[in-house]
Amino acid sequence: MKTCPNCTAAVPELASFCASCGSEFHGADAVPLESAPPPPVLPPRPWLWVAGIGAFFVLLVGCFVSIQTILIYRQAAIPRPTVAAPSNFTLNERNLKQIGVALHNYHDVFSVMPAGGIFDEQGTEFHSWQTALLPFLGYGETYETVFFELPWNAQENQWPMGEGIQQYLNPAITQTHTGSGFALSHVAGNSQVFPDNKGLAFKEIVDGTSNTLIAGEVVDGFAPWGYPRNLRNPTDGLQGDTRTFGSLGKNGVLFLKADGSTLFLDEDVDPSVLKALSTPAGGEETPETPNMRNSPQ
Image (cartoon, rainbow, N blue to C red; front, top):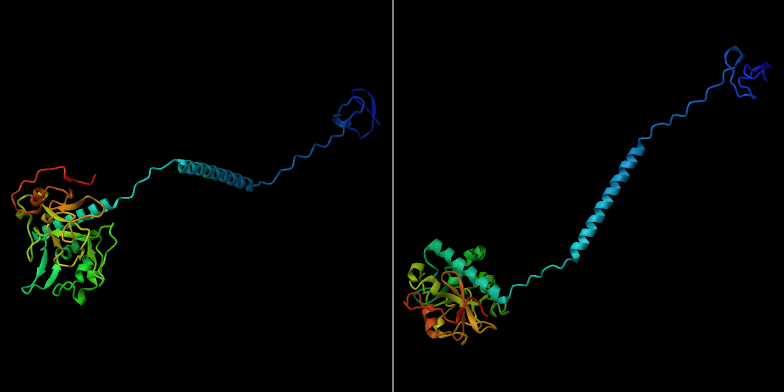
């Protein structure tokens, strides 16, 4: 036993702590207390960083997908304006204008329009103005397969003459081929501007290209586009019979003018106006009348 230096209480010989006063012993009389062990050092765990970054990335992706989904549903809920399909009249007018462009391109190359039809001295029917326009309408390959030294309806020409040409077809008319397989045309040329074996130059249309009909729609008596006599005379009247120009479901006829524009003529148009529009060099006046307009109303 030994005495506590502070309170003189008896303490065990090897004690370093007084139970009475709680004093620690120092110096020779004290037995040093063992220091507390250091806290354990945890090993580094880098996978926690990876897991944290991955969780953050997944959270970002989830937020992005959620926002996109909301935007898509909101956009789908917005009513969109409807676009009306083009009418048959519009499509037919577009076809006539494409024919007009082709005629002008042909004229740029050859300085004349194509002849109405090609015939020999015996009157053998070879080829039409519509066949001559094929390369300028996007049908160059078809044109290359035509045997021009043979009549249009020769056996060797059966294949090319059987191909339907979009610009020559009215989408409102279902009849597109003859019984023997020749493709029809729902467009006829003005016989007064398409002479036989000779092409007319624009400078010869002294009445003015904007005052001269060059082609128009037909509704009956269709001829194959390769037929060299696919021509009609507008002065015979409109909507009359298989020899005249006519339309389907309209009280008039849509024409192509030599300047490439289109003109809708009422079926009761004044015959004198119709005659003035039909001739390329007649010298007639062509006043605007209620029977002439750009589209049916």
